[in-house]
Image (cartoon, rainbow, N blue to C red):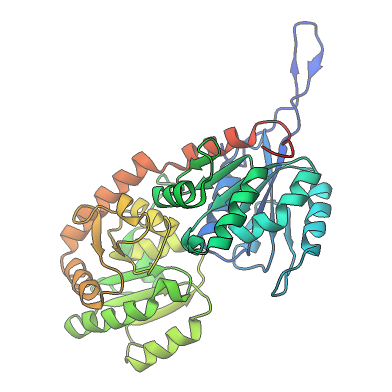
Length: 391
């Protein structure tokens, strides 16, 4: 149920007394930032689809704000940015304790390891349940980090992963007990009204005869935008009207801009920064591309499929579990520029086949990644009583 659901004032009982329902439980999402990244979007999606009669949500960004901050506040969620400087800061746990106490938090939902590390003591001191989500398990190749997560898991009521790859890593490599480990796949909405392609293109300054690919991802090294630009250079040589929309921001922003200039792609590659109209970007595009070196289960891929767009992606993480090669898109090996360029050209050059793949992808997401199912799962996880010292 959405955050707009009415709150019941009270109801009569057989003895004529009025019983008021218990107040909504406060759930605090603790994230690294409020940039428009996968973990942050995942947290905001959960908060926005909980039953408002039972749950309230708040957000604490440990390091920095970002593009989602305005949206979080517009939806009425309390929001705090702690501005943690680089390094280890034990005093941050005390700040979190005071924040959780002021908000009367009953559930602390952390996203990624650092947020769990700083939140554990504060959550226990206020008697809150701890639900932790690991969005990527790449960092757990380091033994010390594996040991640390195993120890912290003793204090958690549930450890959530978003795909099978994460489940296998946390179960087999780290030893998280089965009773605490859950796979909760990201949910996306497929019920929104899609903007007509021609209208979306006009709004973005694209013409109908420009085959267009889009990537929505942080500009960070693991997303490998450099590989995408090199591959798109090959596509552009064969298809001069082709366009590439690059949506996102990050540490690689200047390097990506320099590479666009070096390859002479300024006329056909549009660096669009952070956008909150991703549905318009997808409506205007013919193909969604993601060429990461490593991934979990990217929400951006699910959103593209929900929008009826074929997906071209590297076969890493849990992507092969949702994108069926040759059915709902194409999968290529990571760091294979030739394979990426060839598949991109083939899909942009065959719009009928691409459209059919998009339809197949939308049906798959509608059946398997419904946002209401995700929200219901978290409501059940949040529902239990106050957490003991060791869950």
